[in-house]
Length: 293
Image 1 (cartoon, helix red, strand yellow):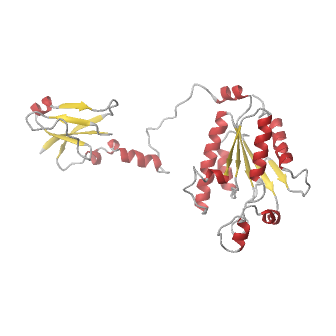
Image 2 (cartoon, helix red, strand yellow):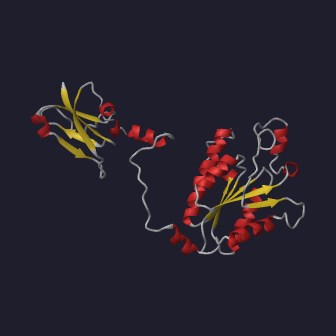
Image 3 (cartoon, helix red, strand yellow):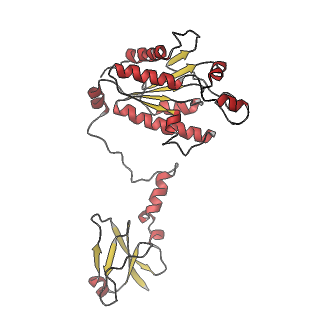
């Protein structure tokens, strides 16, 4: 038997089909289809009543009782569109970049600063978060807007689904890099402080931004110093074999080769203080014009 099948992307249709005992309050089937006999009279008398203020596009075709509309027309399947959207190798072809009427230079002029990403990398216990906080405070005192993406903090929300396996660490860095890029585009000075042990991952984040807008800061602190600090007790657990894949113990840390700023531990209380290290970063930003509109 041939028939008329109608499907909405979000079924929200009631139907009344005179002469066929249709119930005007009957919900459409779970699969989202409404089927009517291919009778010209029935088609003429069919009434479709929208029960939603927002009605999504529908399509109507002649199909047999065994046919599947989504099989013949995969573009109509909402599931297929979602699968294409999340598939890393294939993107949905119906996504278009929407340009804003306010550009990055407008926002930077408003804030009187230039957006960038300050990426602080180093071993656990090297002082990344401490320096990030000191830098954020020092810039705030100068009237500059910053935001800090701390490695531990981000894992409480955005990256709470990730482990510390190599592939998850890569995804952790990728997500933070994308978020940091958005902050920089807004005109904010984004401070990212996380171990980020692999050069390839850090270089991928660098490639997301315009030339010069990724400022890599290396906390050059010896492993022995970091382990002696051990503020979270993680080195002790790693040495005892209770934590596997810990950076610096049984997982490598790849030091930057061409970073913009190196903060080297000297043992001197002044030069190694968080405030002085923050001032060293600020000097770099000033010389590059990032603290001007």
